[in-house]
Length: 204
Image (cartoon, rainbow, N blue to C red; front, side):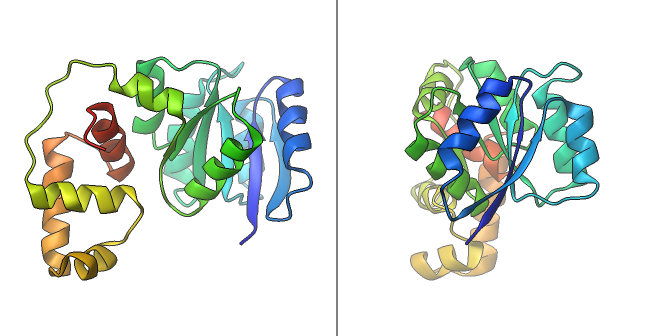
């Protein structure tokens, strides 16, 4: 499966570095880059990448705000946050804005490819540093049942409601009920936020 990749970053060396890492990967189709939010939005009016690597700090708008705007306009596009920062509020805000993952700029080629492939498949990817940062919290952990934990684990692994129902020998409506219950208990806006919060609390 070929992934059409676009990058938004205002540092040319970062863009060239990532491009050189991925240029020989047959499953990656390099669509180009933008150095600011306006250029990114202009590009998206004409082209449809599968994954956007998005810097957090941009000259005309934060990557967090841009991510939210992109996801509202083009929900099928997966956004992968890219930054030198691994502070918990930044990571959480990026995920809350609709990003499918978060990656630091010191990532290896293998981690970069894994991240791109993971979010392309509709799953969530958080780098090791991002996971560690999210776990550094004293927030109260909601109480969940054994079955809810099983469902949560399978959601995190990217399984659909139908697949989860099949694996746990329960009905699809029951899975949906558990999913809704988990989202409410974690006060999460969507599944990606649910997974991030579960990771942060050490449940996953």
